[in-house]
Length: 178
Image 1: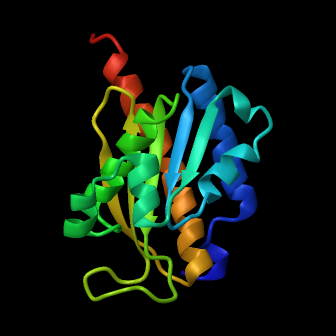
Image 2: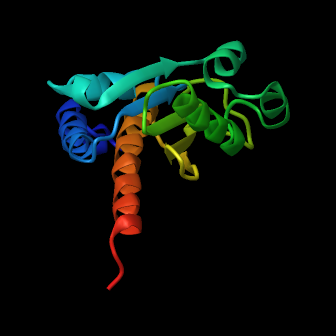
C-alpha cells in the first residue's frame, strides 16, 4: 500500500462523523477496546463534536494483565491463543461491553510492527471484533501492509467501517418482514 492509498486524517474524521450520526440516531453508545491502536479509534471518534452523546469510553489495554483486569480476557485464552487471536479479540469486545455502559463495541488486537511478527502472525496481522449488547460477536482477521503507522491507520478505518456494517446488520434484523 502506498502512502497515497492510506486513509487520511480527514477520511477518518468523515467516517467517525458519519458513524456518530448513525449511533446517535439509533440511541447507541460506543465503547472501544484497543491494543495495537493504543486509543486511536477513541481519538478518531472523540474528534467529532458532540460525541459525548454517543461515545461511552475507550480502553487501551496492551499487557496481558490489562486485558485480563479491564476486559475480562481469560488467562487461558492468552496462554493458548496469544494476544493476537480471534479468541482474544472476542473476549476483549465482550468484556468492553460488560464493563461499560456501551451498547456497541469494537476491539482490536494485532501486530503493528516493525517487530513482533512471526511466520504464523506476521507484522500487519490484526484481529478486529465487533459486538452489539445482547448479540453475538463477529471477528475478522486483516493483513495490512506497510509500516507501523500504516497498519494502525488501516486498523482504525476498518474498525469504523465494521461498526457501520454491524449497524446495517442490526437494522436488517429489526425490520418487519414483508
